[in-house]
Image (tube, one colour):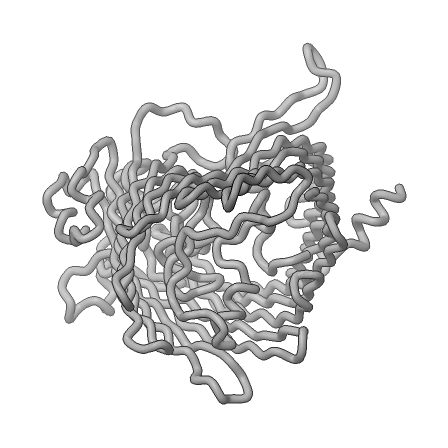
Length: 471
């Protein structure tokens, strides 16, 4: 009971949907973004870099080479009224961080067990789960699963080559990035990243799962994503970006690995029924120094498909696009950091989908690679935060979300099944769903206490409390 009381009083870090391993290693951590907004760090896309820790339970050094080991332990309590479930979870594992010369390595590997009060349970982070039922060879009913994120890279004069299993965040958004979003399910990928002056290029090839969330992979068919991103700092406070994706089913596209190859052209070299693609353009403008506030105004526009340019915004189903706009403000008050983030997103029906079910959708484990709302949706998201260094932080996130239910509203909807002629954005959806999410966290030496809430109404409140120890 004492532990449960402590968990219920504990308070969390990032105002995002809680996912296993996600809060501990965010692809675009807000504290780093704050440094960019106030002008202490250069304005650029957030790529694949990470900083090895300098202290841990065991640290091995040889000259400037370092290897650090962090044992990890956690206990978590989730009260999810939206699913009628009370969950108590435990996890344990290890984090390994290090570098040798130009090589860097990281690993975060943990084993989890969960008990549930609901008769039907779900995968909390949308990856596979293994369920044990009391009776037969099992004395208890529980879930068990293992999770890891890992990467190895080498940086030299020609750029950075690497491989990892993790999430990505491309573009300037925090919550609603359209091509790769940090709230997606992690996948295995190999990548290259290089830069010449103000110009940067990133390219990757990744393995995606066709099977849905919570399931073991059980098909020999393949889905592969090739993606390129190009960035140009027009000036220190202006950044122009272009992101491309090409997803292929049961095929390979060797030329698409080359970062300079335009994927929207390479797509035409393959079978139309077996590939899918999109391209997005984004622009970020950081406020100049000397103003009372630091901040950035940004936008991203994605084109999934179009009949021809002049008809992009009509009601033909094949004209598929999405747009995201945001404003991010930040200020230092001594050692206290405060900020406000506002983003709006509009995603047309059939975006991210494909002709045949379970083929070349822009998805992994049944969820989009981009904005997790999926097609036929719009949202306004706002967050306010206050933090002191990395010792404590608190904030509140608010979401107004409109989500359609017609065909073309789910990434799994297949065009050949519904054979649409026209589309109607958010047909029959008059009012948004509102969610209010208070969050906070406090770290003392090796121990972090955190809590996150999502409150939609009095009968739909989700609370997650966690005690986490990384030595």
